[in-house]
Length: 380
Image 1 (cartoon, rainbow, N blue to C red):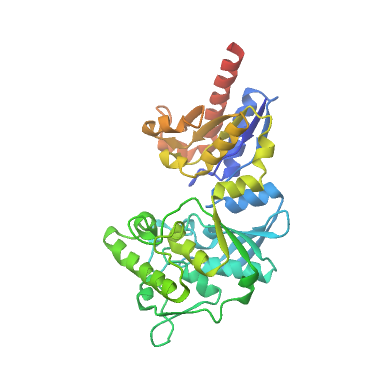
Image 2 (cartoon, rainbow, N blue to C red):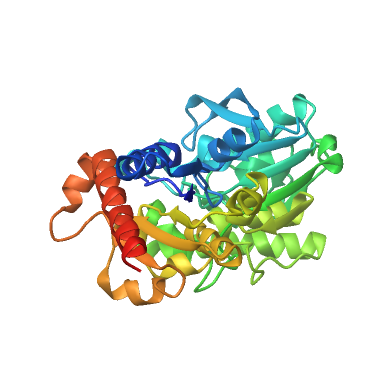
């Protein structure tokens, strides 16, 4: 029997690789003759860099950058095994994981560090990029990143606007005269699993702002700041970001890539699956087990487990979903794509226990799943 282990991280507990190790341990306890292939994945957010570098035998680089609040940190980026394609994970420099809950500050939080990572990669000679933009702490329309790359944002009198999202209300002129000239030679593939517009009821601020610290009464204000940026972009460059799908990704940095960098968007899981050659590895497999921290009906809108399940179906393999938590109300929809749907949290395991002992919970639940599968197989 061949089993593919290809799951996302369980955010807040284990990385994708650590989850894979726990799943493999559970399978081996059932039958050591089972052939397992570990291919951890991500969908453009935290863990995308690790998945791509590990799967392609790539290498890491590091650079000193500013975190969302302007503190100096060392962030990683990498190059795939082809030694050509550079991978940058926005979360490394501008991620919400870099902040404590009481530090969330959408007014100050900047993507400047992400721009610094791109600049460091340009210095290394890279011109082909995969950028994972999930897990951001920012709602700054990507202006921090653009500033780091040389773009200048000016008031009506020609002076530079201040830092912070509120300063966008004074934006009158976008000056590209100092934009890094090497960007003209660069190509960016943006790994993203959302298609929200830049502003409005489904835009960057309304949908994702609250998790970054935007209060409900502030949403209209922040949205207006982003609207001013979009208005100036349309006025100067003829590019309308306001209702453009994907422009609202990661606090509007999607729009910044569309307007000023040579960028195309792709579902993060599709990029990762291609890089790890999942379709080739899945040939001859009977089962594919995948999962994430929490699965619900939103999982069926471009998240990593859905991509894995679709690949399994094409290869006539059964897809198994084991996630940290799945509400009963969401299970019927998930059974559309998965033959087994299991949650670590159940009537015997609490949320607290699953968070405190994730490796053991994953190992034991995986063991139980495969014991049941083999039992059904032998009795049929």
